[in-house]
Length: 265
Image (cartoon, rainbow, N blue to C red; front, side, top):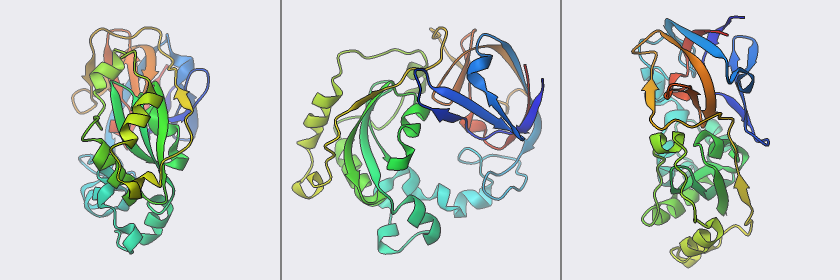
């Protein structure tokens, strides 16, 4: 059965193994059910901006047309650098949007994806953010009332631990064992000044995430609709926002937000 629509990143649900759903048109495709099956994606050449809905020849920042890329609140500088957020001072591209996204409780966390990393997300985005990054363990470090304070904490901590995920290593599942997240959390707290220690979370639960993957590849090769309009192969697993095929090729679904495609199973 063919499914048609414009890509938006897969919805996820934390279960024994993460559940993935890809919405295309009016259909919700249960991607876990397709693992082990031959699938074919066909790009129709169309890219629709996920903010304004207009056609665009090129996607910016994973799904935006250029005007929205430079104006939309979703692409503000503070999305990548939360310490620069000024919403708490009443300054933002769109204050109504900022009140719902920046002036909300945020979490500074430690996670293990390709290695130990620090990150920031809204509390309501837990565990979605961890899943999207392909983390297999995560722990809350701080709870802050806005994005700016979370960013200040992250800036201090990323002098001691990475804030990046190496996607190739993550997809090959090259796990780093022996990392005790609770111990790492306690180490990180020593680096915080007293005024930021006020936001330390007492929640020490370690969340573990398991992904629906038959077998992880030893080598990975990234696919893109910009290079080929048809992508076909046997789906072998899903991790983060990546589809993993049995030949080691991978497709980043989120990168192709807005692309008009047909999925044949």
